Amino acid sequence: MTRLARVMARPTRREFVWGGLASYIALTTAACRARQTEASDAAAAAPTYAPQSMNAGQYEMVSAVCDRLLPADQDPGALALGVPVFIDRMFREPELAVLQKHALRMLPFLDRRARQLVPGSTFLQLTEKAKDEVIKQFQLGAEPEKRFFAILLGMTLEGAFGDPRYGGNKDGRGYRMLGVDPDQHDMPSMKGHH
Image (cartoon, rainbow, N blue to C red; front, side):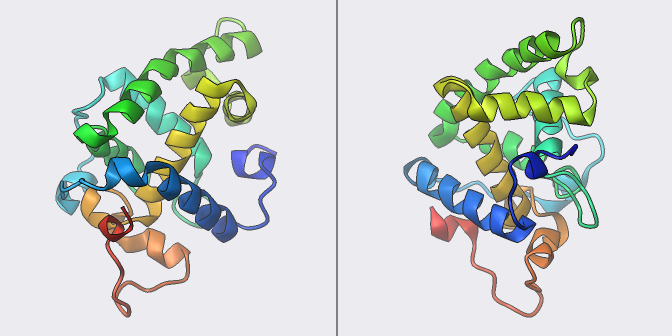
């Protein structure tokens, strides 16, 4: 199995998404309550997005983790849904500064785990299967690693399936993956849940 989702043995993508999103919302309710920033869909679609809350290397690492947390299959994955853009924008919010600090502080440990798994490799150089193994080690590891996993999993889910105004869920495709047509329904803003 090369997908983290399979390693985690979730029955369906939909059950995984709703379970993870519910946990993340509970974890970050207070931090997100004051969020006001709205993002432009055009900027989210830009192929040469310049991150503002991370340097280029950090953004690439976060993108790689998100890609394994929600990889593309018959549906778009985290990258196509604009999740890294969403995370970068959310990390600019003062209310999420603690989450940003922890996530960015833990990124170098991905490379450390990668070298333990494949000597001389960085996380970005690993195969998909090896990346999944490293991420699984974080999921099951000590508290700082578990928290890093929870932050990125939660933000990946929110970015993929939340309000498109914040840079993720590009073109509302995340809604459609959940079986909801945003053109036929009034979709609640993610702000209403924070």
